[in-house]
Image (cartoon, rainbow, N blue to C red; front, side, top):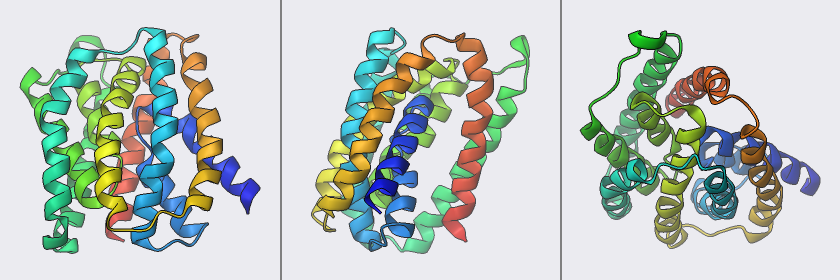
Length: 245
């Protein structure tokens, strides 16, 4: 079991950091289905598990020169308050309401990301700069209410605003550090962290997150974007479906 958790952590850490997410949904899946943790414990443990790998991956991304702080800071303007508001109000919101709301939004973002990835050059539309605040707010609410990392909306917003995949992944990881810290604080007060399981998964994810940004830096950003952008959209659609089944 220990070796399996480490291996799965490595896969998630490597894959998620390349996609610019914190991996909350993937870690939750491992912790619930493999480690058999309760939902509250899994939510707290997943944020604890994801944060160190996210920090390591962000530093690696920073050294590649792909990070765009201006976009990240705009996201944080609305994402940070939304995380706090979501955390404080989560206990008063019926689960069915925010489950369907997040699922619908993720599905729409996923479809739009897939569509954008198959449009060519000048046909690609660009969202208005102010819409980045909406994506930030949604990301914060996902962290605060659902205990997820919120990486999906952040990545979708950055991609649809015109950044390529390496730039979006780097900028997203920077944003998610702050959201994960706040989310971990609130969710750790509501659920118990399983330290043993969390540390095993974390060990693998740290290695994966450390090496993947350096690997991506050796490839053409346009080719990386062409491959990973539709994958990101498909993952968001799958996540949306899993929310409601």
